[in-house]
Length: 230
Ligand SMILES: Cc1cc2nc3c(=O)[nH]c(=O)nc-3n(C[C@H](O)[C@H](O)[C@H](O)COP(=O)(O)OP(=O)(O)OC[C@H]3O[C@@H](n4cnc5c(N)ncnc54)[C@H](O)[C@@H]3O)c2cc1C
Image 1 (cartoon, rainbow, N blue to C red):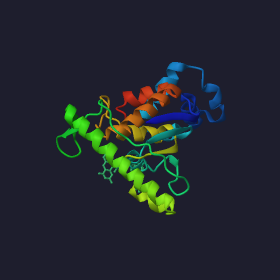
Image 2: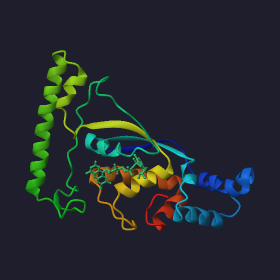
Image 3: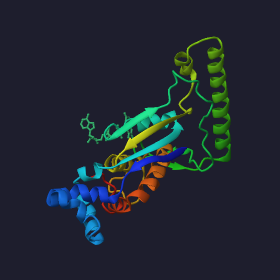
Image 4: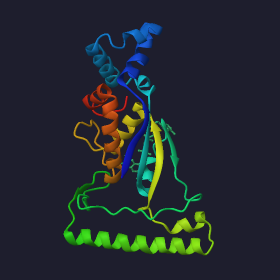
């Protein structure tokens, strides 16, 4: 998976500035750097009491390359997100497919909505690698055959499986990102545990690490308050 922060305008001061306009009006810009402890306290208060809109005055654009099954889950996040994805109609899709590595726990246990995953055996890992590779090769060969025979890309792509990689730009703000992170990561500090698919969680973790560098006070307050988006 690739997750690159390609563009951003996002800082803790954006939150403070937006919040302080309530009380300080246009003087709020002068307040920004006056008292760091007060600023930290204000961000924490906004997070705790779920005053969410001050966390929207910022923007982050990520380039994400991940399998289609990850994108399918990702695009369910509608609010505060903008997406543009590569097209299977306008370009020939590249043969890049997902095969889990040995770190991916393969065996699912427990009940729906609360699955636990445990290590697979070496045989299971070998089976997964072999079955996926063979299936991907067969599907991509059929795709090329159809393209060579003059079939439209938008028709031929139907044979390609959800393990195929796609790429997109995804733009969000800190509030929409926190909502996404609350649902798509499993974290010990979360007030409400979530049980996301590991692959989208890998994307979410990479986004979180890059966001945390831009907005450390907001990130710390998110964690402190149970990873609930305000
Ligand atoms: C672990 C996990 C398992 C899942 N399993 C399934 C599954 O089996 N099947 C499935 O279909 N989906 C599944 N989903 C997707 C899930 O139902 C949501 O679609 C997805 O998490 C996006 O969440 P959201 O709607 O809160 O986000 P967004 O679309 O970004 O919305 C953000 C918030 O805006 C508000 N909002 C947005 N749209 C509306 C609306 N139309 N009406 C009222 N309020 C609105 C809500 O408060 C919402 O929380 C799963 C998600 C997770 C995390």
